[in-house]
Amino acid sequence: MQTFVDEVFGVFKRPEQRRWAQVYLWALIHVSGKKTPRRVALANPLPPAAARGLHRFINASPWNWVPVRRRLAGLVAARTAPRAWTVAELIIPKRGEHSAGVHLRTDAATGRTVNCQRALGLFLSSGAESYPVDWGLVLGGVWDSDRERRRRARIPGAEAGHTAADHVLRYAAEVAAQPHLPRLPWVLDLTRCDDVAGVLAGLARLRADVVCEVAPDQQVLTGGHPAVVTTVGALMRGPRSRQTHVLLRQDPDGGIRAVPVHTHTGTVELSRPGGDDAGVRPYRTVERPDPDGRQSARYWLTTLADHRAEEILQLARGHAAALSAVSVLGRRFGVLDFEGRSFPGWHHHMTMASAAYVYQLLFGDRVEPAPPPPPPVPLPAEALTGARN
Image (cartoon, rainbow, N blue to C red; front, side, top):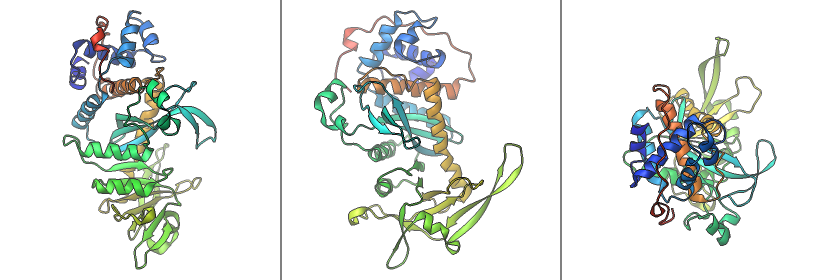
């Protein structure tokens, strides 16, 4: 763990900050229950006095989470065989109204209205595993306009007016700007996105390949002069316009069954409203009917024209792996447990939870459980002040 801390948190200039990072990391991995500084410090064998230092490290220390996350992403890329970047949503239920970004939101699955924060996590997918390497809070509404509320939550001025689509494109631009990170396809679930064409146009400008799930009623343009506007669902209903591929799948009982997958014989395009066609490119359409016929078919648009249908669906599973990681992060690593209200504090906590998840996944099964590191002396005042992140 010491080596991991030195590699990921080596950007900290103060030794006591690295030591608090190691204490917090150890606690997130080994302490059960809710992961707050007070509860963590009450768990044996950490001394209760550690609560104050842990609270300050997360909520008051002005460390920048961006270089830490970049080091974490670089470590994952170097120690795994990554295949795709993907983004997954995390809904964090809250009771009050003062935590950064908290708002009322209707759950699409249940129809219930919940008071929550909405976060988007960036994951590096490697086969059946996805590793969290970045996070963003989707603000909007009163959080873009209420200056006093933003001041109390310590939200930077640049964090305003960003939609979920903006966060995805920001992730892609930052990855493209870092030469040590791999250029991989972006696997996204855009079935509930309000601007699919805008997201894909932005990724096209970055020359990023994509495997994006879309809703059946997603409008596309087929080839020809003039182009025909249709939906991906209607496009794939024409038997003459699709090609069938048969994939073999193993059932839980060990049996083998054939699963049909369809691809469109041509390509389609998306056009942005207002005639802005910058970033328009051809996409291949893939349809996967539900093998049991109980649910609707699923559809993907991809730029990977030379990949087999099975390879595209394998990449698409990276998003499911990210959703599974989000669930584990909530159950075991405390991404739902941050009790502070500040924007920097939330990012600090999410950075530590991501580091704990990555450490446990990469090294947890190969090493003996480490004893807790001794907490450092309380952070000096000069370590707790400075420019806000």
